Image (cartoon, rainbow, N blue to C red):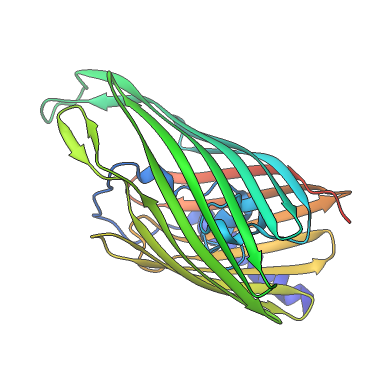
Length: 299
């Protein structure tokens, strides 16, 4: 049985590397980089983490999902897309009794972006884009039944010579019973920001998710993600743990504009965890590779 499951995961992994996604034609809003997942574990699961993201996600999807079996976590991730777009993330998080908090720094750089005033073979010039945000997350558990959380993110963007900055806020709730857990969240609520001569809003996003443990060998998770004034999509994830120190992961995002299947794995030893994720993008974006190294001391 374990061999069959491993072969299935390997098949999907190869399909991602050789395949191509089928969605497109969505114009991304301002601050679309806020949708990027900071953890290879969550990325491999298609971004499904509204119900049970844990300390490692540092409040990426739902600030109420910070609580985990560990009291402390810290880590860093690195991701590259093609050869000129990179993003990195460092975080630390801690749970103490009925409280949990996290601090995260996220940076994305894109170099050698071509600018044209018309349909020419060669660009008029090239420029760079840089985005940075710092996030502070806090969550509280009530009667071991429901968790409530909120986060504040300060954002700075620079594209060529223009820049802007602003604040956005997240709020969420999560709860569980036995092997099931559910979560809802509203992300990126904030005022309009001015970029050059344009006034835009960051991508206000609504999320709802479920997760379930399957015996002692794995789990499944599902999110529905709906940006304001844009079409929504599903994020579906499955994790299989053939042994205590390793995990295989698959993700699927039907309805997304540029991705559908993802895969990855994780290994752990003495509290040190290494996670890897692979995502194939359409629209000429190519493959995304992401690695996260984290530390969670065992109790």
